[in-house]
Length: 66
Image (cartoon, rainbow, N blue to C red; front, side):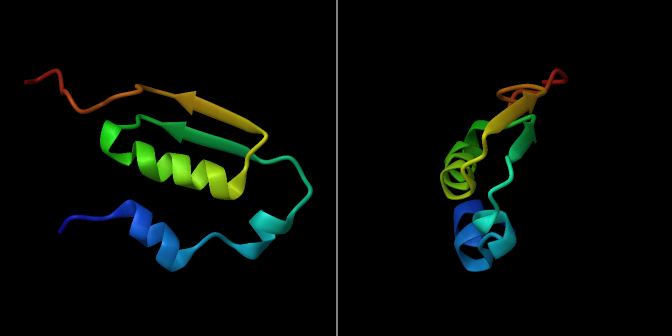
């Protein structure tokens, strides 16, 4: 089953408490394959975090065993 992340975000949305808070927001993401870049961008635009911490690989589509 293919999971369409952007439509999932539109359907579920973000919690109002996250969108309305005046406290600084930190987003942590890790090991991001290129097929979810648009989802991450959409999430950043909606949540507007003050800090983004990215750990792991930028693109994890190619596995070492291949």
